[in-house]
Length: 261
Length: 200
Image (cartoon, rainbow over all chains, first blue to last red; front, side, top):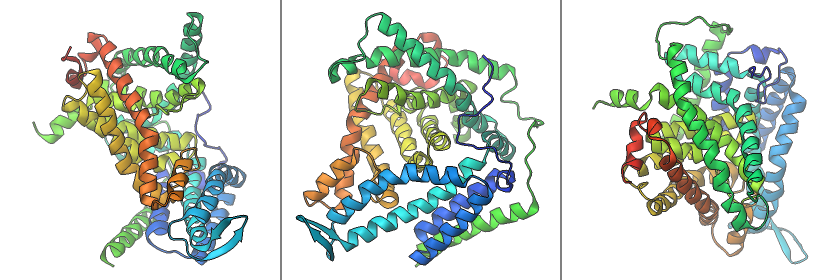
């Protein structure tokens, strides 16, 4: 089977300036965002400013539509659960906002729900920016350049290529076991009983292959520590390197400040 | 044995290849379970297996990477829970190390221990990042506990533990039976597998 050309990830190829950035720069941005949101600034003014700035970055990366689509897909169920549950049931509820049909909506719970949701939206937006604009191969290249060991890069990269084959294998096993009379419908007990005949062949088959895989890797000099030339060239600049350090130092400073105060 | 030497022994090429396969198994096992419409996730069976076959460090790393890759292919929310997956792998590895995977009933106890580890790490993340709600069916348990007058922390603890207990026990027992069924040729290559197999 030929290796799949398209990757299984959420990456979208737009060729924008954000995509050209070094993966580590974008990762430090997520880290800084997380630290700032959860330990540093709070208040709706910062939230609005932050969301606006991020929306501009996302738009200039030409993934605005996809980002909002995914944000909606993730945040909508959370919103639908969080607003009523905390609005009605948050333990520190005191101030009544609305009282109708025997249900009471409280202010504290609503504020808590909205604060949590907005923090989550901010972190999610930064992470989506990374996921949408980083080709997995770029991340893997960056990782293998950074560390001497190719293991981590292999562990992040190979599952993406193995996924499709494994999914096909599940279907093969399922039809084979069905042909032998396994029931995949019926009550819970019956469905539980058909779990083992599905999962055991899948996993054992995969583990038996591990031996061949590791021999193949060894033969190709997997554990060799000599420098290897890479087909992909990552663009990195002094400015980016400085920005990365600055973001990491700011994050560390916020954590330190929080620990002291 | 020095730490770096032990590390080298834990991360042989065979182990690396095993971990990469385990990550894929974690991701597709969930698909299999949803096909059978079962009320469990089974998304840590690969992690537990690596914990049994290659030790707690390899198991923890497998869990961590599974959720990070998940974050890249479906939604970054999964990445937020990567420390949880890591704790599961470490717990499984430690249980195996101390002989808690020798028989099927010991595997059940290990499943409970893994569920406890899972709750210890998952509860703070769920509480501080998600306000106790994750937009899934388990939220009904949380809201029920809140309606009974429990505080948010207690409600989330109950929710996380109950919704994971059956899943982790089934995962542990399945992982035990898989290691038992592996041919000696394979387990011989994985030094840690002795923790599980020699009891027979």
